Length: 170
Image (cartoon, rainbow, N blue to C red):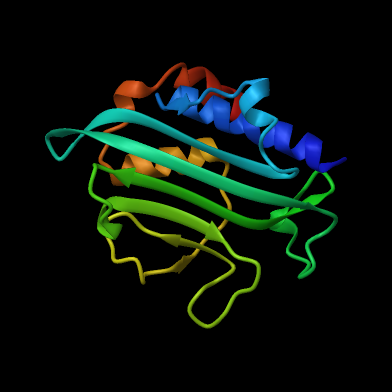
């Protein structure tokens, strides 16, 4: 497999997850916009409106993934797919116009962990940015589902065909 195949797989998963949870990717995934990305990179922004704590607001999703050819140098098989491994990853969901860290949910994969940064970690919604919990790497659709849970169902109105997708994954 190759960087090209993993990027196609990742773009497909993000397109599906964004569609299911009602996010609009801007600009849309088209040949012109995708051809400008460096090899092995997924990068895009998506957004939608939602009612959070009784207020209509925008939820913005910024996604960046860098996939490198070959096995993970630390042997972390969770970060390998299709003959490649994750060099770095940042998934950032911001609730509202303010860039407050407490109004954001982040998942990061960093090249080398240290005493304060597990290699795969999340910055949970509602907590300060210096809170970093070790995490697994979920599928995009599952990460957005967990975000919806933390937002007390605020993204539910964007669900498209969730039941049929859940049945396929079982």
